[in-house]
Length: 450
Image: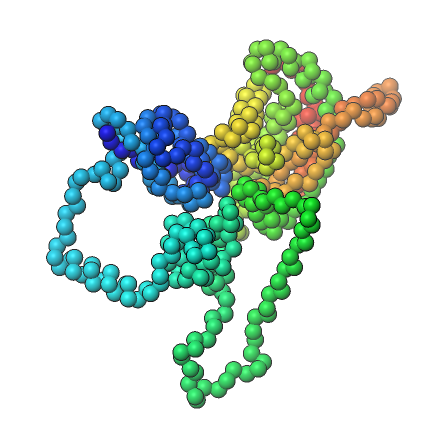
């Protein structure tokens, strides 16, 4: 019998840590190869982590809500047979060489000195009040000199009110800025004059009044993803100068062409042809025409993106949103675009997206028409500078101009709502870009081959 260490895998280049959200197996449970053992969440995506071997779970190294670094051992699995995996630390019999006597004495002296200097009591995993603290939170409290009674007063945003890493970082930042209380054991020198009454002091913060909750009201805590979305939206509004441009588009030709070819498209490609890939193609073409919409602002620098990576906002069953990214969208034909749109949308609904599939977007599209909205004013997905909302397609009476004269007819129309960052995108560029998308759709070739 040997033991295999199941570590937190690399979840993408920019992801260094993840939060353990659920254990799918208990100690003593049998595990098959490729069977999920636990769930983790990053700031980009939720995912299940499968076992690489077959065996029995013998140890859990972390608890729910703990923050785990990439490469750390999360679980130990006992497997049968040789060479099944990396043995756990307990199974390694190779003794470490003893340090030289002088080195050992120096190390022991340094440790003793550090213990005398840092007189902070260790924080127990569970306080006297019954509150649970993860190993990460306990380590942070010890490093920052936070006493157990002080730790009990920190509000927690985790499950069952647990204190998370974010809670600790927020508290430590506030704690560091708070005015220090005068030490009682160190009286001021007698010759020192008292501080004048006119000394500038920070104004006391006005406490926010508690929101009244009625007896019949239901309290629904925000999910982890809901908190992230709320944080990102507030940060975006406080970062970018949002302005909007609106264009009404006649998509009669697009609707007629799709109705004509969608059955043949499905029969040949095995994919549904929705309006989304058609709109994505038009937006990619417009970004090629106006590359200064495909940028990011970094301080005083404008970063002009080489690749056109379209983010596609997708609604999840729990009501939250996620934005998978179609990489190099301008290089895809309509068939490739349809496949990418359908695949990403399906896996987004099944919570099966990979971290790399929701990063590096350069421009975002959201289809508010799916929910019946005529148009919307979406918030920019940072660090991008623009986002386009697609409104519902409606049949409308319209003036049709012909060489023989004007008449009223029924046309399929929709609104495009373009939100952009007025710090770097002026009204001319923002308006010309969305007009280019409209022109491309209105000039759609009804005889186009698929």
